[in-house]
Image 1 (tube, helix red, strand yellow):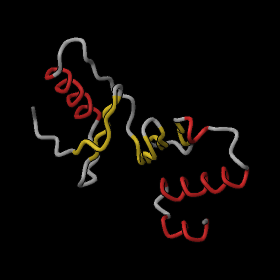
Image 2 (image 1 turned 90 degrees about the vertical axis):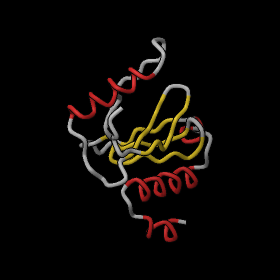
Image 3 (image 1 turned 120 degrees about the vertical axis):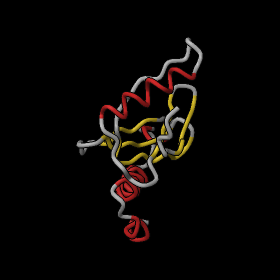
Length: 114
């Protein structure tokens, strides 16, 4: 398999998340070839599909993560710990603000939020 100079940063039963440490943006052809080659080395019953190119992914716990898809402002929030409606409103607001700070690389704002 071609050396894609990527690092696996997350994996579970239905996903594989890779990052490029030198921040080189893969072309669509490179992305398609990566998926093709990945599928070639796994058994026939294991198939990977391209789910998107993300500017940022914040994994908080197993099955609890936030993603910002390339070219979109809306955040994709997954997981019961993040979506639980029983949280106190102030806690929910604080969590949303901290997530925003991480996703948009504004970590210096976190002490002010807290």
